[in-house]
Length: 202
Image (cartoon, rainbow, N blue to C red):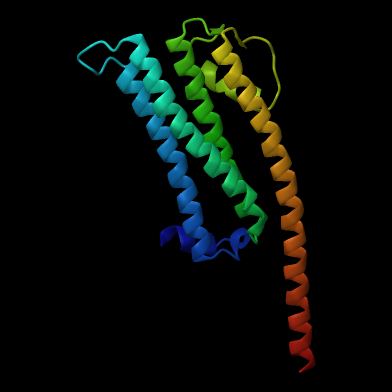
């Protein structure tokens, strides 16, 4: 339990528990699983690792079946986790877990844009490298659009709209969770103060 001892010994995580460490491990596992899944799909289908050529129709079916199912799983898990983040008793742990899920979401959409552009050539204008797709995913999620990369095909526009709408949903959930977390921490601090006062009176 090196991770638990490390976090326990830091003042900014003084109230960490083993149960919350297990949650954090689950979050990290989800992040690396999504990253590994997308990289494996990219290497197998687009890295010429297979000894035979895969028809475009099979590639598109594989994309919709494998990549989208994995992305939907990450999407649902992220939303469920973010909705419960207000149960934490530490702002730092709240933002660590939130950052992990947002990064997993951004990376998943970056890979999706890359796959779409290779399955449907010129689906995105002025996007060529994986860095371009990650950059486009970030500016889309933050709704800061510079116009240097733009979707052309309908499938590319659909995924772009999905990410934009998701960003607004995430923002609403984050604001709600911060408000609830502040409320819960206020109650906890008040209860701790009352207990200390009662002990002193005794």
